[in-house]
Length: 123
Image 1 (tube, rainbow, N blue to C red):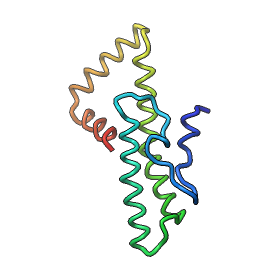
Image 2: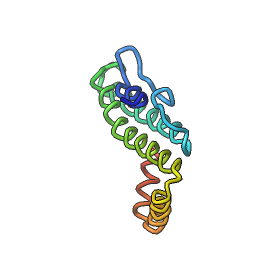
Image 3: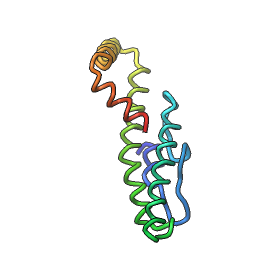
């Protein structure tokens, strides 16, 4: 099991919530670790606000599990993509370099795909 996968499997506990870069073991590619951390803070703020608004306490595990689920859905996808890109760009294997170049050209030409990638990376 990869160390970063284990690191991000449980984001919360009764005692506290791991947030920002401490919750993510990710290659520092394009600053995605900090973007994930910012997204975590925004999501945690929303979830804790909902808990307080509903009259619950901020360490209610039901709300913290909502936070954990929402962020893992986003973070694991991003972390896998960054890991894949890191491995892809560390290869000098000619067929992979050609496929990489074609993929970049396709991404540049297909605006909906490019927007989807940007939206995933920005939250």
